[in-house]
Image 1 (tube, helix red, strand yellow):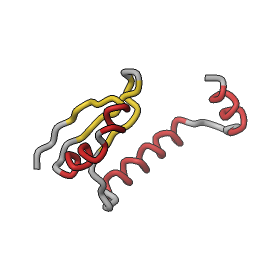
Image 2 (cartoon, rainbow, N blue to C red):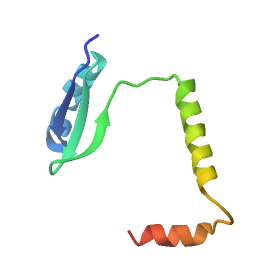
Image 3 (tube, helix red, strand yellow):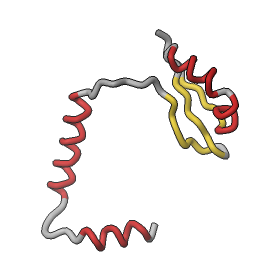
Length: 84
């Protein structure tokens, strides 16, 4: 199975979706852009949850927990996030 990544505009993806999906079945990957900026990926579907990806996520959470010292005010973090 070959794997290649191509970039397509949102308009092209909309217009040629069935063809893109057939290519995805063959192993191709597509990055969809809107006004030149990447917004989505079209990749083959997989039903498997990879254990190593779960382990990596848990390790990342533990790293964040270790970096966070003291009491955390979630409300202030939410408000700060909305400013950006």
